[in-house]
Image (tube, rainbow, N blue to C red; front, top):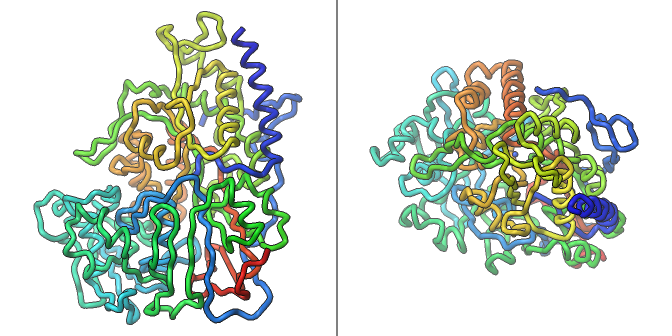
Length: 609
Protein backbone atom coordinates (compact mmCIF):
# COMPACT_ATOMS: atom_id res chain seq x y z
CA UNK A 1 0.00 0.00 0.00
CA UNK A 2 2.80 2.39 0.90
CA UNK A 3 4.60 1.78 -2.41
CA UNK A 4 1.44 2.63 -4.36
CA UNK A 5 1.02 5.84 -2.38
CA UNK A 6 4.55 6.98 -3.15
CA UNK A 7 4.18 6.07 -6.82
CA UNK A 8 1.09 8.28 -6.95
CA UNK A 9 2.92 11.04 -5.06
CA UNK A 10 5.81 10.84 -7.50
CA UNK A 11 3.43 11.38 -10.41
CA UNK A 12 1.73 14.29 -8.65
CA UNK A 13 5.01 16.10 -8.02
CA UNK A 14 6.27 15.49 -11.52
CA UNK A 15 3.12 17.27 -12.72
CA UNK A 16 3.68 20.03 -10.13
CA UNK A 17 7.19 20.56 -11.46
CA UNK A 18 5.88 21.18 -14.97
CA UNK A 19 2.99 23.40 -13.85
CA UNK A 20 5.06 25.45 -11.43
CA UNK A 21 7.70 26.06 -14.07
CA UNK A 22 5.06 27.60 -16.29
CA UNK A 23 3.52 29.80 -13.59
CA UNK A 24 6.48 32.12 -12.97
CA UNK A 25 5.13 33.07 -9.54
CA UNK A 26 7.42 31.38 -7.08
CA UNK A 27 10.65 31.99 -5.25
CA UNK A 28 13.86 30.05 -5.11
CA UNK A 29 14.66 27.17 -2.81
CA UNK A 30 17.66 27.46 -0.53
CA UNK A 31 18.43 31.07 -1.01
CA UNK A 32 18.31 33.17 0.83
CA UNK A 33 29.41 28.77 -0.71
CA UNK A 34 36.60 10.49 -6.99
CA UNK A 35 34.16 7.71 -7.25
CA UNK A 36 32.98 6.21 -10.49
CA UNK A 37 30.98 8.85 -12.41
CA UNK A 38 29.40 6.76 -15.16
CA UNK A 39 26.62 8.97 -16.61
CA UNK A 40 23.15 7.98 -15.44
CA UNK A 41 20.49 6.71 -17.79
CA UNK A 42 17.34 8.75 -18.23
CA UNK A 43 13.88 7.17 -18.39
CA UNK A 44 13.98 6.88 -22.17
CA UNK A 45 17.33 5.11 -22.00
CA UNK A 46 19.39 8.05 -23.29
CA UNK A 47 22.62 9.01 -21.59
CA UNK A 48 22.48 12.05 -19.29
CA UNK A 49 25.89 13.70 -19.50
CA UNK A 50 25.25 15.71 -16.36
CA UNK A 51 24.67 19.20 -17.80
CA UNK A 52 21.45 21.18 -17.84
CA UNK A 53 19.32 20.69 -20.93
CA UNK A 54 17.64 24.09 -20.57
CA UNK A 55 19.19 26.80 -22.71
CA UNK A 56 20.47 29.68 -20.63
CA UNK A 57 18.92 32.97 -21.77
CA UNK A 58 21.30 35.50 -23.30
CA UNK A 59 20.97 38.54 -21.06
CA UNK A 60 23.07 41.73 -20.89
CA UNK A 61 25.07 42.88 -17.89
CA UNK A 62 24.38 46.58 -18.52
CA UNK A 63 21.70 48.85 -19.96
CA UNK A 64 21.53 52.47 -21.14
CA UNK A 65 18.12 54.12 -21.46
CA UNK A 66 17.24 57.16 -23.54
CA UNK A 67 16.54 60.59 -22.08
CA UNK A 68 18.30 63.35 -20.22
CA UNK A 69 19.11 62.62 -16.61
CA UNK A 70 17.19 64.53 -13.97
CA UNK A 71 18.95 66.56 -11.34
CA UNK A 72 18.28 64.47 -8.25
CA UNK A 73 15.25 62.22 -7.97
CA UNK A 74 14.31 59.23 -5.82
CA UNK A 75 15.07 55.65 -6.82
CA UNK A 76 12.68 52.89 -5.68
CA UNK A 77 14.71 49.81 -4.77
CA UNK A 78 13.16 46.41 -4.05
CA UNK A 79 14.96 43.79 -2.00
CA UNK A 80 13.09 40.56 -2.66
CA UNK A 81 12.78 38.55 0.54
CA UNK A 82 10.25 36.38 2.31
CA UNK A 83 11.45 37.61 5.74
CA UNK A 84 12.11 40.98 7.39
CA UNK A 85 15.71 42.17 7.49
CA UNK A 86 17.43 42.09 10.88
CA UNK A 87 18.86 45.60 10.64
CA UNK A 88 22.43 45.00 11.84
CA UNK A 89 24.23 47.74 9.87
CA UNK A 90 27.80 46.89 10.80
CA UNK A 91 30.20 44.96 8.58
CA UNK A 92 31.81 43.56 11.71
CA UNK A 93 28.54 42.26 13.18
CA UNK A 94 26.01 41.50 10.43
CA UNK A 95 25.30 37.88 9.53
CA UNK A 96 22.80 37.64 6.67
CA UNK A 97 22.64 38.65 3.03
CA UNK A 98 19.72 41.08 3.42
CA UNK A 99 21.61 43.38 5.77
CA UNK A 100 24.62 43.12 3.47
CA UNK A 101 22.59 44.27 0.45
CA UNK A 102 21.24 47.22 2.45
CA UNK A 103 24.70 48.25 3.61
CA UNK A 104 26.05 48.31 0.05
CA UNK A 105 24.33 51.67 -0.42
CA UNK A 106 26.29 53.10 2.50
CA UNK A 107 29.35 50.87 2.41
CA UNK A 108 32.50 51.56 4.41
CA UNK A 109 34.71 49.56 2.06
CA UNK A 110 38.32 50.67 1.76
CA UNK A 111 39.27 48.73 -1.36
CA UNK A 112 38.08 48.37 -4.94
CA UNK A 113 38.68 45.10 -6.77
CA UNK A 114 39.25 44.41 -10.47
CA UNK A 115 40.02 41.36 -12.60
CA UNK A 116 39.78 38.08 -10.68
CA UNK A 117 38.51 40.19 -7.75
CA UNK A 118 42.01 41.31 -6.82
CA UNK A 119 42.55 44.56 -4.88
CA UNK A 120 43.27 47.61 -7.03
CA UNK A 121 44.45 51.12 -6.13
CA UNK A 122 41.13 52.70 -7.18
CA UNK A 123 39.44 52.66 -3.78
CA UNK A 124 39.79 54.76 -0.67
CA UNK A 125 42.93 52.95 0.41
CA UNK A 126 46.03 51.45 -1.18
CA UNK A 127 47.35 48.03 -0.19
CA UNK A 128 51.10 47.34 -0.21
CA UNK A 129 52.24 43.82 0.64
CA UNK A 130 55.70 42.80 1.83
CA UNK A 131 55.38 39.03 1.49
CA UNK A 132 58.97 38.36 2.53
CA UNK A 133 58.34 39.92 5.93
CA UNK A 134 54.65 38.92 6.25
CA UNK A 135 53.52 42.53 6.39
CA UNK A 136 50.95 44.74 4.70
CA UNK A 137 50.54 48.51 4.73
CA UNK A 138 47.13 50.12 4.23
CA UNK A 139 47.19 53.80 3.29
CA UNK A 140 44.28 56.22 2.92
CA UNK A 141 44.88 57.87 -0.45
CA UNK A 142 42.43 60.74 -0.36
CA UNK A 143 40.98 63.37 1.96
CA UNK A 144 38.01 61.21 2.95
CA UNK A 145 35.24 62.22 5.34
CA UNK A 146 32.57 60.26 7.12
CA UNK A 147 28.94 61.16 6.42
CA UNK A 148 28.92 63.39 9.54
CA UNK A 149 31.86 65.38 8.18
CA UNK A 150 34.54 63.83 10.42
CA UNK A 151 37.82 62.97 8.68
CA UNK A 152 38.64 59.30 8.12
CA UNK A 153 41.89 58.42 9.91
CA UNK A 154 44.15 55.46 10.59
CA UNK A 155 42.32 54.99 13.92
CA UNK A 156 39.19 54.09 11.92
CA UNK A 157 41.18 51.48 10.00
CA UNK A 158 42.40 49.88 13.22
CA UNK A 159 39.12 49.99 15.15
CA UNK A 160 37.36 47.14 13.23
CA UNK A 161 40.20 44.80 14.24
CA UNK A 162 39.77 45.87 17.85
CA UNK A 163 36.05 45.12 17.64
CA UNK A 164 36.40 41.68 16.03
CA UNK A 165 39.32 40.66 18.24
CA UNK A 166 37.80 41.93 21.49
CA UNK A 167 37.09 39.35 24.22
CA UNK A 168 33.46 40.55 24.34
CA UNK A 169 32.92 40.41 20.57
CA UNK A 170 29.52 38.85 19.80
CA UNK A 171 29.92 38.31 16.05
CA UNK A 172 31.21 35.45 13.91
CA UNK A 173 34.29 36.92 12.22
CA UNK A 174 36.88 36.06 14.81
CA UNK A 175 38.12 33.02 12.91
CA UNK A 176 41.31 31.33 11.76
CA UNK A 177 41.92 34.05 9.20
CA UNK A 178 41.72 36.76 11.86
CA UNK A 179 44.00 34.76 14.15
CA UNK A 180 46.64 35.00 11.41
CA UNK A 181 47.32 38.55 12.65
CA UNK A 182 50.20 38.66 15.14
CA UNK A 183 48.82 39.37 18.61
CA UNK A 184 45.16 38.77 17.75
CA UNK A 185 44.87 35.67 19.95
CA UNK A 186 46.46 37.36 22.95
CA UNK A 187 44.16 40.37 22.57
CA UNK A 188 41.11 38.13 22.25
CA UNK A 189 42.13 36.19 25.35
CA UNK A 190 42.36 39.41 27.35
CA UNK A 191 46.11 39.00 27.79
CA UNK A 192 46.94 42.23 25.90
CA UNK A 193 45.34 45.65 25.59
CA UNK A 194 46.17 45.97 21.90
CA UNK A 195 46.82 43.76 18.90
CA UNK A 196 50.60 43.85 18.72
CA UNK A 197 50.71 43.12 14.99
CA UNK A 198 48.77 46.27 14.07
CA UNK A 199 50.63 49.57 14.22
CA UNK A 200 49.63 53.11 13.34
CA UNK A 201 52.30 54.63 11.12
CA UNK A 202 50.68 58.07 10.81
CA UNK A 203 47.19 59.53 10.54
CA UNK A 204 46.64 57.87 7.17
CA UNK A 205 48.60 54.61 7.33
CA UNK A 206 48.69 51.38 9.32
CA UNK A 207 50.98 48.36 9.18
CA UNK A 208 49.75 44.82 9.84
CA UNK A 209 52.07 41.90 10.58
CA UNK A 210 50.79 38.39 9.89
CA UNK A 211 51.96 34.92 10.79
CA UNK A 212 52.00 34.20 7.06
CA UNK A 213 51.08 36.01 3.87
CA UNK A 214 49.49 34.15 0.97
CA UNK A 215 47.82 35.13 -2.32
CA UNK A 216 44.55 35.35 -0.36
CA UNK A 217 45.62 38.75 0.94
CA UNK A 218 45.14 40.23 -2.54
CA UNK A 219 41.53 38.98 -2.36
CA UNK A 220 41.17 40.55 1.10
CA UNK A 221 42.02 37.36 2.95
CA UNK A 222 44.69 36.26 5.45
CA UNK A 223 42.97 38.38 8.12
CA UNK A 224 43.03 41.68 6.21
CA UNK A 225 39.77 43.54 6.91
CA UNK A 226 38.03 45.40 4.11
CA UNK A 227 36.11 48.03 6.03
CA UNK A 228 36.64 51.06 8.22
CA UNK A 229 34.61 51.71 11.38
CA UNK A 230 33.86 55.20 12.76
CA UNK A 231 35.78 55.10 16.03
CA UNK A 232 34.56 58.53 17.09
CA UNK A 233 30.99 57.18 17.08
CA UNK A 234 31.59 53.69 18.47
CA UNK A 235 34.50 53.95 20.94
CA UNK A 236 32.35 54.72 23.99
CA UNK A 237 29.93 51.83 23.36
CA UNK A 238 30.98 48.54 25.01
CA UNK A 239 31.76 45.98 22.32
CA UNK A 240 29.24 43.55 23.80
CA UNK A 241 26.52 46.21 23.37
CA UNK A 242 27.34 47.31 19.83
CA UNK A 243 24.86 44.98 18.15
CA UNK A 244 21.91 46.53 20.00
CA UNK A 245 23.14 50.13 19.85
CA UNK A 246 21.51 52.94 17.86
CA UNK A 247 24.89 53.52 16.20
CA UNK A 248 24.57 50.11 14.53
CA UNK A 249 20.80 49.82 14.25
CA UNK A 250 19.51 53.33 13.51
CA UNK A 251 22.21 55.95 12.96
CA UNK A 252 25.22 54.30 11.28
CA UNK A 253 27.86 56.72 10.00
CA UNK A 254 28.97 55.87 6.48
CA UNK A 255 31.64 56.41 3.86
CA UNK A 256 29.24 55.31 1.13
CA UNK A 257 27.21 57.24 -1.39
CA UNK A 258 24.15 57.38 0.87
CA UNK A 259 23.34 57.62 4.55
CA UNK A 260 20.39 56.26 6.47
CA UNK A 261 17.56 58.79 6.89
CA UNK A 262 14.43 56.87 7.91
CA UNK A 263 13.92 53.28 9.00
CA UNK A 264 10.92 50.99 9.45
CA UNK A 265 12.38 48.01 11.26
CA UNK A 266 12.57 44.94 9.04
CA UNK A 267 10.56 46.57 6.25
CA UNK A 268 12.14 49.62 4.62
CA UNK A 269 15.00 52.10 4.64
CA UNK A 270 15.10 55.60 3.18
CA UNK A 271 18.57 56.80 2.24
CA UNK A 272 19.62 60.36 1.40
CA UNK A 273 22.69 61.48 -0.49
CA UNK A 274 25.93 61.69 1.48
CA UNK A 275 27.20 65.17 0.66
CA UNK A 276 30.63 64.18 2.01
CA UNK A 277 31.02 61.14 -0.25
CA UNK A 278 34.67 60.94 -1.29
CA UNK A 279 33.83 60.25 -4.95
CA UNK A 280 31.44 63.20 -5.14
CA UNK A 281 27.88 63.86 -4.11
CA UNK A 282 25.49 61.23 -5.56
CA UNK A 283 23.34 62.21 -8.52
CA UNK A 284 20.21 60.90 -6.82
CA UNK A 285 18.65 62.69 -3.85
CA UNK A 286 17.21 59.56 -2.26
CA UNK A 287 16.92 55.80 -2.48
CA UNK A 288 13.94 54.11 -0.86
CA UNK A 289 14.59 50.44 -0.23
CA UNK A 290 11.71 48.16 0.59
CA UNK A 291 11.43 44.45 1.40
CA UNK A 292 9.08 42.90 -1.17
CA UNK A 293 7.78 39.31 -0.93
CA UNK A 294 8.51 37.02 -3.92
CA UNK A 295 4.79 36.68 -4.61
CA UNK A 296 4.43 40.46 -5.08
CA UNK A 297 7.57 41.50 -6.92
CA UNK A 298 6.47 40.58 -10.46
CA UNK A 299 3.36 42.74 -10.29
CA UNK A 300 5.29 45.53 -8.56
CA UNK A 301 7.80 45.66 -11.41
CA UNK A 302 5.09 45.51 -14.07
CA UNK A 303 3.24 48.47 -12.57
CA UNK A 304 6.36 50.56 -12.00
CA UNK A 305 6.38 50.41 -8.19
CA UNK A 306 10.11 49.62 -8.21
CA UNK A 307 13.05 50.66 -10.37
CA UNK A 308 15.52 47.93 -9.45
CA UNK A 309 14.97 44.53 -7.83
CA UNK A 310 17.78 42.72 -6.04
CA UNK A 311 17.68 39.07 -4.92
CA UNK A 312 15.11 38.47 -7.63
CA UNK A 313 14.09 34.77 -7.70
CA UNK A 314 15.57 33.01 -10.72
CA UNK A 315 12.55 30.74 -10.99
CA UNK A 316 10.37 33.81 -11.60
CA UNK A 317 12.27 34.86 -14.72
CA UNK A 318 9.25 34.00 -16.88
CA UNK A 319 7.27 36.63 -14.99
CA UNK A 320 9.51 39.52 -16.09
CA UNK A 321 11.31 38.48 -19.26
CA UNK A 322 8.64 39.92 -21.59
CA UNK A 323 7.88 43.14 -19.69
CA UNK A 324 8.53 46.13 -21.95
CA UNK A 325 9.06 48.65 -19.13
CA UNK A 326 12.29 47.08 -17.91
CA UNK A 327 15.48 45.29 -18.90
CA UNK A 328 16.57 42.09 -17.19
CA UNK A 329 20.31 42.05 -16.49
CA UNK A 330 22.28 38.96 -15.52
CA UNK A 331 25.64 37.92 -14.11
CA UNK A 332 27.12 34.77 -12.59
CA UNK A 333 26.74 34.75 -8.83
CA UNK A 334 29.58 34.47 -6.36
CA UNK A 335 27.61 31.67 -4.75
CA UNK A 336 26.47 28.08 -4.94
CA UNK A 337 23.55 26.14 -3.49
CA UNK A 338 24.30 22.97 -1.56
CA UNK A 339 23.12 20.19 0.73
CA UNK A 340 24.96 20.07 4.04
CA UNK A 341 25.07 17.29 6.62
CA UNK A 342 25.26 17.86 10.36
CA UNK A 343 28.31 15.98 11.62
CA UNK A 344 29.03 17.69 14.93
CA UNK A 345 28.67 20.82 17.03
CA UNK A 346 30.24 24.28 17.28
CA UNK A 347 32.01 24.73 20.61
CA UNK A 348 31.42 28.38 21.43
CA UNK A 349 33.86 28.34 24.35
CA UNK A 350 36.76 27.22 22.14
CA UNK A 351 35.44 28.85 18.97
CA UNK A 352 35.85 25.69 16.88
CA UNK A 353 33.74 23.01 15.22
CA UNK A 354 34.02 19.53 16.69
CA UNK A 355 33.08 16.52 14.57
CA UNK A 356 31.16 13.71 16.27
CA UNK A 357 32.26 10.31 14.97
CA UNK A 358 28.91 8.91 16.11
CA UNK A 359 26.81 11.51 14.30
CA UNK A 360 23.79 10.07 12.55
CA UNK A 361 25.00 11.24 9.12
CA UNK A 362 28.65 10.28 9.65
CA UNK A 363 28.67 7.60 6.95
CA UNK A 364 30.21 8.74 3.69
CA UNK A 365 28.35 6.13 1.63
CA UNK A 366 25.03 7.34 3.04
CA UNK A 367 25.91 10.91 2.11
CA UNK A 368 27.09 9.89 -1.37
CA UNK A 369 23.86 7.96 -1.91
CA UNK A 370 21.81 11.01 -0.97
CA UNK A 371 23.80 13.06 -3.50
CA UNK A 372 23.51 10.55 -6.36
CA UNK A 373 19.76 10.19 -5.76
CA UNK A 374 19.04 13.89 -6.47
CA UNK A 375 17.73 14.71 -9.95
CA UNK A 376 19.14 18.23 -9.92
CA UNK A 377 19.04 18.63 -13.70
CA UNK A 378 15.29 18.05 -13.73
CA UNK A 379 14.68 20.71 -11.10
CA UNK A 380 17.07 23.17 -12.76
CA UNK A 381 15.45 22.73 -16.16
CA UNK A 382 11.86 22.92 -14.97
CA UNK A 383 12.16 25.81 -12.56
CA UNK A 384 15.12 27.96 -13.48
CA UNK A 385 14.98 28.30 -17.29
CA UNK A 386 18.72 27.72 -17.60
CA UNK A 387 19.62 30.18 -14.81
CA UNK A 388 20.77 27.30 -12.60
CA UNK A 389 23.09 24.47 -13.62
CA UNK A 390 24.22 21.46 -11.63
CA UNK A 391 27.25 22.44 -9.58
CA UNK A 392 30.16 20.04 -10.01
CA UNK A 393 32.34 21.49 -7.26
CA UNK A 394 32.62 24.12 -4.54
CA UNK A 395 34.34 26.89 -6.54
CA UNK A 396 31.90 28.91 -8.71
CA UNK A 397 32.88 29.37 -12.39
CA UNK A 398 33.15 33.12 -11.76
CA UNK A 399 36.60 32.43 -10.30
CA UNK A 400 38.03 31.61 -13.71
CA UNK A 401 41.58 31.04 -12.47
CA UNK A 402 40.57 28.32 -10.02
CA UNK A 403 37.32 26.82 -11.32
CA UNK A 404 38.04 23.35 -12.72
CA UNK A 405 35.69 22.41 -15.55
CA UNK A 406 36.91 18.79 -15.55
CA UNK A 407 35.20 18.04 -12.24
CA UNK A 408 32.10 15.88 -12.70
CA UNK A 409 30.54 15.96 -9.25
CA UNK A 410 27.50 13.88 -8.36
CA UNK A 411 25.46 12.94 -11.41
CA UNK A 412 21.90 11.71 -10.96
CA UNK A 413 22.34 7.95 -10.61
CA UNK A 414 19.69 6.26 -8.43
CA UNK A 415 21.07 2.79 -9.10
CA UNK A 416 24.46 3.86 -7.81
CA UNK A 417 22.73 5.38 -4.78
CA UNK A 418 20.97 2.08 -4.05
CA UNK A 419 24.22 0.14 -4.37
CA UNK A 420 26.00 2.50 -1.96
CA UNK A 421 23.23 2.10 0.61
CA UNK A 422 23.40 -1.68 0.32
CA UNK A 423 27.17 -1.60 0.79
CA UNK A 424 26.78 0.63 3.84
CA UNK A 425 24.27 -1.74 5.45
CA UNK A 426 21.09 0.31 5.00
CA UNK A 427 18.66 -2.40 3.86
CA UNK A 428 14.90 -2.77 3.56
CA UNK A 429 14.48 -5.66 5.96
CA UNK A 430 10.67 -5.60 6.27
CA UNK A 431 9.78 -5.08 2.60
CA UNK A 432 7.96 -1.75 3.00
CA UNK A 433 10.23 0.09 0.55
CA UNK A 434 12.01 2.02 3.31
CA UNK A 435 15.50 1.09 4.42
CA UNK A 436 16.30 0.40 8.04
CA UNK A 437 19.60 1.43 9.66
CA UNK A 438 22.60 -0.85 10.02
CA UNK A 439 21.12 -2.43 13.16
CA UNK A 440 17.77 -3.04 11.50
CA UNK A 441 15.97 -0.19 13.27
CA UNK A 442 13.58 2.27 11.64
CA UNK A 443 15.59 4.99 9.93
CA UNK A 444 14.46 8.51 9.08
CA UNK A 445 16.46 11.61 8.12
CA UNK A 446 15.37 15.14 9.12
CA UNK A 447 15.83 17.78 6.40
CA UNK A 448 15.74 21.56 6.98
CA UNK A 449 14.97 23.82 4.03
CA UNK A 450 13.78 27.41 3.67
CA UNK A 451 10.19 28.48 3.09
CA UNK A 452 9.19 30.89 0.38
CA UNK A 453 6.35 29.64 -1.77
CA UNK A 454 4.43 26.64 -3.04
CA UNK A 455 7.19 26.08 -5.56
CA UNK A 456 9.75 25.72 -2.78
CA UNK A 457 7.55 23.02 -1.31
CA UNK A 458 7.22 21.29 -4.68
CA UNK A 459 10.98 21.26 -5.22
CA UNK A 460 11.71 19.88 -1.77
CA UNK A 461 8.98 17.27 -2.13
CA UNK A 462 10.44 16.25 -5.48
CA UNK A 463 13.82 15.65 -3.84
CA UNK A 464 12.14 13.79 -0.99
CA UNK A 465 10.60 11.55 -3.63
CA UNK A 466 14.05 11.09 -5.22
CA UNK A 467 15.31 9.83 -1.88
CA UNK A 468 12.20 7.71 -1.36
CA UNK A 469 12.90 6.07 -4.72
CA UNK A 470 16.18 4.70 -3.33
CA UNK A 471 14.58 3.69 -0.04
CA UNK A 472 15.34 6.65 2.23
CA UNK A 473 12.67 8.23 4.41
CA UNK A 474 13.42 11.98 4.54
CA UNK A 475 11.13 14.09 6.72
CA UNK A 476 11.02 17.87 7.14
CA UNK A 477 12.46 19.23 10.36
CA UNK A 478 9.63 20.89 12.32
CA UNK A 479 7.24 19.24 9.83
CA UNK A 480 7.40 22.13 7.38
CA UNK A 481 9.74 24.47 5.51
CA UNK A 482 11.33 27.05 7.79
CA UNK A 483 11.27 30.86 7.48
CA UNK A 484 14.64 32.30 6.37
CA UNK A 485 15.84 33.88 9.63
CA UNK A 486 14.63 30.97 11.76
CA UNK A 487 16.23 28.51 9.36
CA UNK A 488 19.71 29.97 9.80
CA UNK A 489 19.21 30.40 13.54
CA UNK A 490 18.50 26.66 13.78
CA UNK A 491 21.33 25.65 11.47
CA UNK A 492 23.87 27.83 13.31
CA UNK A 493 22.68 26.47 16.66
CA UNK A 494 23.13 22.85 15.48
CA UNK A 495 19.48 22.15 16.24
CA UNK A 496 19.18 18.40 17.02
CA UNK A 497 16.09 18.24 14.76
CA UNK A 498 18.34 18.82 11.73
CA UNK A 499 20.29 15.97 10.12
CA UNK A 500 20.83 17.69 6.77
CA UNK A 501 19.89 21.04 5.26
CA UNK A 502 19.58 22.86 1.93
CA UNK A 503 21.17 26.30 1.80
CA UNK A 504 23.46 28.56 -0.25
CA UNK A 505 26.87 30.13 0.28
CA UNK A 506 27.78 33.58 -0.89
CA UNK A 507 31.53 33.26 -1.34
CA UNK A 508 32.36 36.95 -1.59
CA UNK A 509 35.27 37.99 -3.76
CA UNK A 510 37.83 35.77 -2.03
CA UNK A 511 37.87 32.24 -3.51
CA UNK A 512 39.67 30.80 -0.47
CA UNK A 513 37.34 28.32 1.28
CA UNK A 514 39.06 28.71 4.67
CA UNK A 515 36.47 31.14 6.04
CA UNK A 516 33.74 28.58 5.45
CA UNK A 517 35.37 25.20 6.04
CA UNK A 518 38.17 25.65 8.60
CA UNK A 519 37.55 24.44 12.13
CA UNK A 520 37.52 28.01 13.52
CA UNK A 521 34.90 29.18 11.01
CA UNK A 522 31.48 29.75 12.55
CA UNK A 523 30.12 29.35 9.00
CA UNK A 524 31.28 25.71 8.94
CA UNK A 525 27.70 24.57 9.43
CA UNK A 526 28.37 20.89 8.72
CA UNK A 527 30.92 20.94 11.57
CA UNK A 528 33.23 18.65 9.62
CA UNK A 529 36.90 19.00 10.54
CA UNK A 530 39.93 16.80 10.01
CA UNK A 531 43.70 17.11 9.96
CA UNK A 532 43.68 16.45 6.21
CA UNK A 533 41.13 19.21 5.60
CA UNK A 534 43.12 21.66 7.71
CA UNK A 535 46.29 20.86 5.77
CA UNK A 536 44.56 21.27 2.40
CA UNK A 537 43.08 24.63 3.39
CA UNK A 538 46.43 25.84 4.65
CA UNK A 539 48.06 24.79 1.38
CA UNK A 540 45.60 26.89 -0.64
CA UNK A 541 46.60 29.93 1.41
CA UNK A 542 50.30 29.16 1.77
CA UNK A 543 53.39 30.98 0.58
CA UNK A 544 53.89 28.28 -2.04
CA UNK A 545 50.50 29.26 -3.45
CA UNK A 546 51.89 32.64 -4.42
CA UNK A 547 52.55 30.68 -7.61
CA UNK A 548 49.19 30.62 -9.41
CA UNK A 549 49.73 27.17 -10.94
CA UNK A 550 50.58 25.72 -7.53
CA UNK A 551 47.48 27.30 -6.01
CA UNK A 552 45.24 25.92 -8.76
CA UNK A 553 46.52 22.42 -7.94
CA UNK A 554 45.93 23.07 -4.25
CA UNK A 555 42.33 24.06 -4.99
CA UNK A 556 41.86 20.88 -7.04
CA UNK A 557 43.28 18.70 -4.25
CA UNK A 558 40.83 20.28 -1.80
CA UNK A 559 37.89 19.81 -4.19
CA UNK A 560 38.77 16.14 -4.70
CA UNK A 561 38.95 15.67 -0.94
CA UNK A 562 35.59 17.36 -0.35
CA UNK A 563 34.02 15.24 -3.09
CA UNK A 564 35.36 12.09 -1.45
CA UNK A 565 34.02 13.17 1.98
CA UNK A 566 30.62 14.35 0.62
CA UNK A 567 29.97 16.49 3.70
CA UNK A 568 28.84 19.44 1.58
CA UNK A 569 27.19 18.43 -1.69
CA UNK A 570 27.01 21.22 -4.30
CA UNK A 571 23.63 21.54 -5.99
CA UNK A 572 23.54 24.58 -8.33
CA UNK A 573 25.83 27.16 -9.82
CA UNK A 574 23.72 30.29 -10.03
CA UNK A 575 23.02 33.14 -12.42
CA UNK A 576 21.71 36.28 -10.76
CA UNK A 577 19.08 38.34 -12.58
CA UNK A 578 18.36 42.00 -11.82
CA UNK A 579 15.35 43.71 -13.43
CA UNK A 580 15.93 47.43 -14.09
CA UNK A 581 13.18 49.90 -15.00
CA UNK A 582 13.67 52.02 -18.12
CA UNK A 583 13.70 55.25 -16.14
CA UNK A 584 17.18 54.33 -14.85
CA UNK A 585 19.68 56.09 -17.12
CA UNK A 586 22.52 53.57 -16.96
CA UNK A 587 23.14 50.46 -14.90
CA UNK A 588 25.99 47.95 -15.09
CA UNK A 589 26.33 44.83 -12.94
CA UNK A 590 29.43 43.32 -14.57
CA UNK A 591 31.76 42.37 -11.72
CA UNK A 592 34.72 44.30 -13.17
CA UNK A 593 32.74 47.35 -14.31
CA UNK A 594 29.90 47.49 -11.79
CA UNK A 595 28.37 50.96 -11.57
CA UNK A 596 29.03 52.92 -8.38
CA UNK A 597 26.00 54.12 -6.47
CA UNK A 598 26.93 57.80 -6.70
CA UNK A 599 26.72 57.49 -10.52
CA UNK A 600 23.14 56.17 -10.73
CA UNK A 601 20.65 58.55 -12.40
CA UNK A 602 17.02 58.56 -13.54
CA UNK A 603 15.52 60.12 -16.69
CA UNK A 604 11.93 60.62 -15.49
CA UNK A 605 10.08 61.59 -12.32
CA UNK A 606 8.06 58.37 -12.33
CA UNK A 607 8.94 54.78 -13.19
CA UNK A 608 7.98 53.50 -16.65
CA UNK A 609 4.88 51.29 -16.50
